[in-house]
Amino acid sequence: MGVRWFPLVGWAERGGYLADGHGNSVPRFHVTWGTGPAVVAPFERRVRDAASSGLVGLRFRHRVDELTLTGGAVDGVRGAILEPSQAARGTRSSRTQVGEFELHAPAVIVTSGGIGGNFDLVRENWPDRLGPAPERMISGVPEHVDGRMLAIAERAGGRLVNRDRMWHYTEGIQNWDPIWARHGIRILPGPSSLWFDARGQRFPAPHFPGFDTLGTLAAIRATGFDYSWFVLTQKIIEKEFALSGSEQNPDLTGKDIKLTLSRVRPGAPAPVEALKRHGADFVVARTLPELVEGMNKLTASPLIDLADLERQIVARDREWTTRSPRTCRSWRSATRAATVVTGWRAPPPRTRSSTPRPVR
Image (cartoon, rainbow, N blue to C red; front, side, top):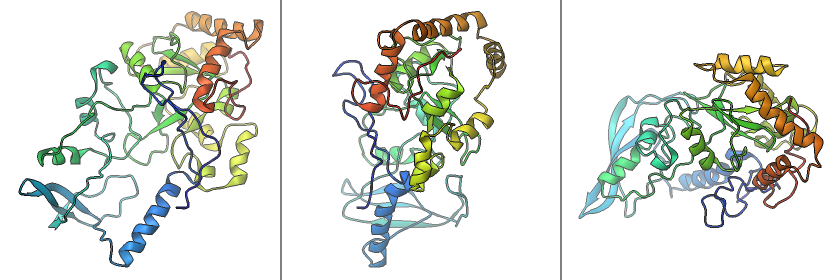
């Protein structure tokens, strides 16, 4: 097929804490060499070749509004032809109708994507086990990922299952250079950041960065707030922060070996540094008092207490400086979180973990 993978398989989202718990039971985080475009390219090439030979028909700007039935069986689609659009990728395109269409086939398969761009549908299907749905959300997908075909398929007799099986990333932040409305970027963190709730209380084990998204989501919602905080240093962000998305990884997307190897050099990757400098959700300061002041200015109420936050950071730092790293609890938490990346219990990999040192 021509698809290649970056030779570092990770165990992302380990999830449940026993063998029969939720999450991934095996390493499954495969980074494609060329990211998303490289996954699509071989399939697109084959489809376009089939279209050129008359085996496939492409109907762009055709919106399906109904599945047609004959004798109780789905035998086609019916809908509207939309006017041509020059909208940029990911942005909302025109919904002006200029015609109608109807197509029939012996077999109909619906492959319409998820619901992530439709917050009303997300809230409608939000499971009680995760607590109440957040009032404020951002989206990792464009608006066209709206789930409208789910209701259309259901009206035609389709049976929808697992409506509550959602996967919402808790490390999402606003994209400072958005491609679509409410565009969010997910941080792919290493283990060293300290994760605090909205009131400045550190989350207990096993809610470590990058370890269990669904478990941490439930923990965040249990606080009654829609957000949480990472507290970290420049050294940690340089070594441990990566961003999700093809635009945020130009080295991998462009299959640039030299640029990819530059990740091991000092300094944060350019997209990470740009997000830190320009992102609305970042607070950057030289001292802890200045940091807390900035955190409290960013939220509706000043919930972070400097003395309490300092106490927790000092407690964490004390373990790094007074014990052998391999015997302290902070090391064990970092090693536990390292299974997210390595797939086995081992010290955090050097490519994605900073050297253990105090945060304060």
